[in-house]
Each structure stands twice: as structure tokens, then as C-alpha cells.
Image 1 (cartoon, rainbow, N blue to C red):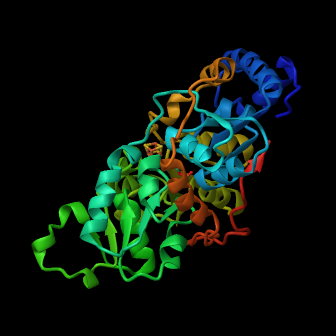
Image 2: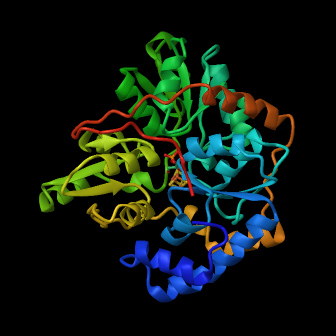
Length: 369
Ligand code: 13P
Ligand code: SF4
């Protein structure tokens, strides 16, 4: 959406895309906030990045780029703007700060955390290194800067398998997402154990273990079950289901496609099915329908990420007005974390594997507005 648009024009454009999803009164109210954000964005030479989980009006309006965590990290590393406002959760804004330390990085809510990032500490990683000496540590990007600083390389859901496969070591430590570790193991044929549930004296030698996982989970994706899937398929036998790899391996084994948030969007856009269901944060289905009115999405979703939902247009405006909440990553943590993130950015994600339909194009990078 152009930065200079009037409230009326913004409202018309939003109504065209979101008439099925958001009441008109809300669109009109939010159009005024969007005008103010656009003015401030110009005045303060700011870039707004929006994660794919943002609520539909925010997602459709103020971000200069929308995308998954990998794509948004790349945008954060490239920008020449003075300020980056990260409409996403804290670990994403921290990654932007790690990559662009000279910029002011803001996150609109101080409450936008993540159960995965809260699920492991830097001390835990040091303990793992002691337990598996010489094994490289891959940290999922959903971690704090302190944890990234202890890692050899980071990954996101878009490149996790490619990163693990790029490491030549017999044993690799992958933290903190248990399900992601199990899903990577299934995809790469590696044997996985969870370190915290696996006492050192159990008699398993290090050679038996190819992937060492941790026990954190995404509080959103862990809620989807195989029983839910069966019930949905019974009611809608022609439904095509895509799931985020933070879901359990049992769920992933039953779906038609698994990939990062952007990979799921591209999958729906580039395939033809009577109807789709996404097992991920609910906003994504609304955002896909807004951009692709011809697609039928089953909106049976009731699972919201409470952290992503903290990010509102109102708080984004306050963020630019009051320069809050400033994200800082002190040295030497930042430069150590930078090495792990930088290494990740040198590795291209492998195209996600498609299990049912033919995908016409590979997932493209973040799109600008
Ligand atoms: P993506 O990297 O796929 O955008 O996912 C981030 C996330 O937090 C999913 O829950
Ligand atoms: Fe974290 Fe899960 Fe929310 Fe993603 S959906 S930000 S992994 S809590």
C-alpha cells in the first residue's frame, strides 16, 4: 500500500481485500491509524517488517515487507533506513538488531515473546556442549540472542534441514524445538534423542546419536493433533492440509505439505485444490484469502499465537511516535550471535518437499509493498 494514500483510498483498498474478514467500521477506524503510521514512517525514515502471522489489516497495510523469519532477517540485514519497526515477536526483532546494530530496532509490544525462545537458556546450551563434546550446535532462530551467541549456526523453518545437512559432524545438537528436531530427523534419516530426557549413564554411545534435541515446544503448534486431522478429513475428504514443522511428527506425517509460513502461503497459491486447511496461526488463512479471493480456506482455526497477537496497529503507531520498545543486544553477545546468523544466511533453503500436489513455482522471497 502506497505511503501517501488518503484514509478514504486506504479504506476502499482494505474493503476490497478484507470485506469477508473484517467489519467495515473496524476498517474505517484502522484506516486513520494507517495514515498516521505512513506519515511517521516517512518522517522518521523507518522500515516496517511484518511477519506472516500479523492480523489481516496490519498485514495488508503498513509493512514494507512481509514474510517468514528468514526472509525478514534478510530484509533487516539489507535496509538503509534508520529505524526498523518489527511487527513480529521479540526474537525476530533481536535478530534484526544482531544483523543491523547501527539501526534503531523497535518492537511494538514488550509482551511479544515466544514459548520456544523461553524454552532454553545459554547455560543449557553450554551444558549440552559439555555432554556432546565437539558436536556443532544449530539454534532455531526462535531463541534469545544469548542462546544464538552459544550456537555455531542458526536456522529457521525455511532452511532447517538444509542447515543440518550442511554440517559434516556425526552428531549435531539442535535446539530448542523438540518437534522440529524430530521432523528434521524424519526428513534426513537421522537418529534423534532428547538430551534432557536422556541421562548420560543410559549406555548409548555418542556415535548412536546423530541429532540431539531439546524439549521446548511451540505452545500454538503443539495443540494440533492427529485426531483433529482425522475428524476434519472425515468431514471434508477433499481438503488439502499444510502444516508448520513446529507441529508434532505424527501430525506432519499425515499432512499434504509442511514448510515455513511463506512456503505454506506459496503452496496454496501455486497449487489447485477444492479447499485448504493450514495447521498454524489462524491469521495466515485470512491473509491468504485476502490476497487470493479464488482460494477456499477452511477457517476452522481457533489457535492463536498470544505473542503475535500482541502486535497491533495502535501499538505500531505508538512505537514510531515514542520510539518504543527499543531492542538492544549488548556486545559481546551480539557479535557472537551475529556469526551464527551470518552463517545461516550464506546457506540457501532447499525447496520444501511436496507430498501431494504439483507445486508450480518454488517459494519466492519476501514481497515488498
Ligand atoms: P516462520 O519462520 O516459518 O515464519 O515461523 C516462525 C514462527 O514463529 C512459527 O511459529
Ligand atoms: Fe513462538 Fe509458537 Fe508464537 Fe511462533 S507461534 S511465535 S513459535 S509461540
